[in-house]
Image 1 (cartoon, rainbow, N blue to C red):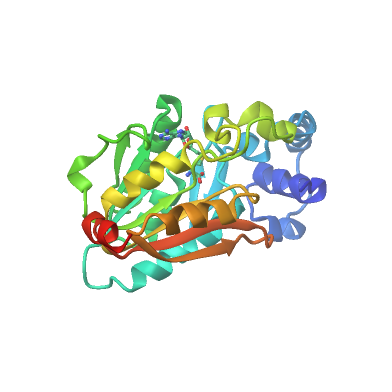
Image 2: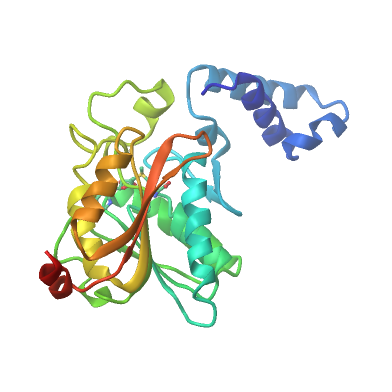
Length: 278
Ligand SMILES: C[S@@+](CC[C@H](N)C(=O)[O-])C[C@H]1O[C@@H](n2cnc3c(N)ncnc32)[C@H](O)[C@@H]1O
């Protein structure tokens, strides 16, 4: 959804260095500030994403550095983060192991590490360019006092990935590439988010389907997962999880705009138990 007025206010707030809500309290500004502001508005008018101009996006309580070569974290993902934090509340007193698959800028992994300093957080990203942004963000967060996370370069569909975490993970979160190829996208997305971050094959499930098999390997019994998906794919992702009898408590969730956005489940059985139940 486009919001030119809000974007203009956010750019003004960026230029004068205040929160958007405090803009009305800013006294008259110098001509150079107006010039700088005009230049930023002109860049936004060229459909450059707001977050590429300010260099910042947020997830939960943290800010992330973003720019060309990395996916800009979206508000759509905030409820998935809130779900994961609620699940982690049930693990107080332990050191829960969290795995963020397709981490991009590190948004989910770092927001979780910030909110839960006791968690042991791992994150996986395939694209070296995106991983460089994740490393930059992870270094900044660690310098600011958050518990460091472990970043892995790898393919979340690779059956040999992270064997050391098998049966050890308490919570898996993932916002993978899931847009069906050929979908019409805003210029900001099509021209500025990396294609590898966006498209999930003809049905939007080309990464999710093989990734689900790996998640079954990594989750301990009782561990939980959440996967973000295209708004047309809620029922398919839920069915894919329910079909594998190792998962139970499958539930579909919507995003802040009320669109089907992520599916959650729990690992309830070993592969042997699941095979016996078939
Ligand atoms: C939609 S973006 C989400 C980034 C981040 N999770 C967020 O919510 O802001 C998906 C990310 O998955 C990465 N990716 C795509 N295919 C992958 C794969 N097979 N294995 C690991 N990462 C992958 C992309 O490079 C991109 O950074």
